[in-house]
Length: 254
Image (cartoon, rainbow, N blue to C red):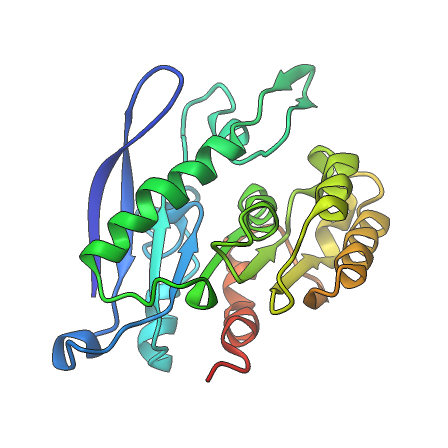
C-alpha cells in the first residue's frame, strides 16, 4: 500500500507544498500490532511510479517490496524542482560553485526538517519502529551525498544509509572534514557505490571515491563499497542495485 499526501516544506521564500510517498507492507492491515523499520528516501517522485519520475523511469521500489515481501516501511519525499538549482541547494550540506555560480547549500535545514518534523509525523501516523536501530536513509546522486551527510551528522537518528552514486564532487574537502570530525556509533552501516561509466563525469572521481571509503573504514564504519560494472548515472541502474543495498540495510537484523 502506498499513500501519497502533501505537507508544507520550509523554504527561504516561505512554506512550499511537498509530496510525501509512504509505503506500508500489506501485512500491516492483517496484523496491526506489527511495527516496521523505516527507510527514508530522497527524490521521492523517482522512487515508486514511472508516471511521477523526472525522466519517466522510477526505481521500481513498489514492485521490489511487493515481490520480496520486505518487512519495511519506505517514506520518500520529492525534491525542490525550481529551475534556479533548487534541488542542488536543498540536497547539499555545503556551499559550492557550479557552472559559474555559487550554490548555497541548505542540506542542514533539509535534514532538520526530516528529523524534527517529518519523522515525528511518520512515527505518530504509522506502525513504525522509531528507534535509531530501525531508522535508515537512502538516495542517489545529490540524494546519495545527503544520505552520507545524514548518517554522519545525524547519526543519533539514522543507523544505516545507502549512498548510490553520491555527488562527492561538490566539495570533496568538506566531505572529508565532515567524516573526520564525525562520531559514528559502532553499529553504523553504510552502503556506497559508483558506476564505472559515470566515473568520468567529474575529475578524479575514482581517487575521491576510494579516499572517502578509506576515511569511513578508518572511522570503523561497517562499509559496503562497490564499483558497478558498466554502471550509469540513472534510475534504471540504481534499480538494479536494489537487492544489494536493501540486503545491506537489513543484514544482521535480529
